[in-house]
Length: 323
Image (cartoon, rainbow, N blue to C red; front, side):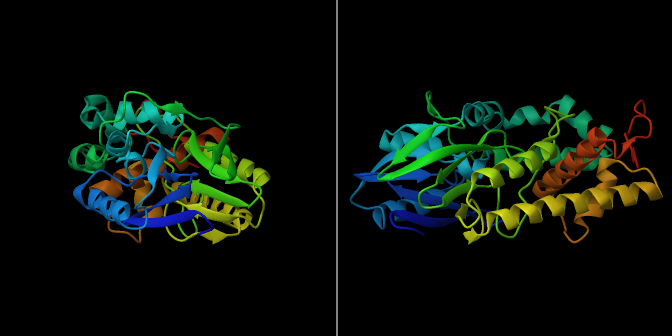
């Protein structure tokens, strides 16, 4: 992708069928950026990488952008195998321990009540709380220690100086690396060429505003990154034009909020009833339904905070939005 930076696309067993990982020249070896999920296919891909383009040089460290399984899934396996440090944000490390390595907790009654209160039926709730969270099990046990990096830190990789940036909304405290000298950004999932990163409300923070945080993060990113930077994302193709893409994403979410408002002016609707408004073009499996529902709720919470909508009756068994 650039001198001393390799790109690999690793398969995923989802509709979004791949994740991008990067290997960065780190002097006498390679630093790895993100991992893929923990399954037999991904381990086999890494075996081929290690025996092929990475052969003959050591792995120096593993840098993980955020806690989602497709990015941190093999962190434990890789750090143990090569006895290298895990470098990530504190939030990513702790959220992985709390969520991804204890997926059964999401089957608790509290989580079921969260889905039911927002209009998901009992059968759909059962499916989402069980099969919808299967992907959370695709994570190898993390190492007992990690090296924390936060926004404003610097990381030297080989002959490059990277600034650590932090994004929010898609994942709390998502780590990105920016080389200002070369106008090169490893953006993880904060900005992707052709799709909108998932922005979701989860039961652990039912009144959270991840969409508001995401839009603020896009504004901050535009101010920090040169407009013509090469963007290496966690999915799809690398691209140029971060400012343009960030503006497109901002407009995309504004259109979604308008669609929700238009639907709720016809009749008040629960978050579950709004899923077809935003995702009418998709046939959703349990995994996708959990994300679609939670992304709808992110737009609902954003509209509630801005005053663009309100609950019809907060005491009702099922909450419905009106605009």
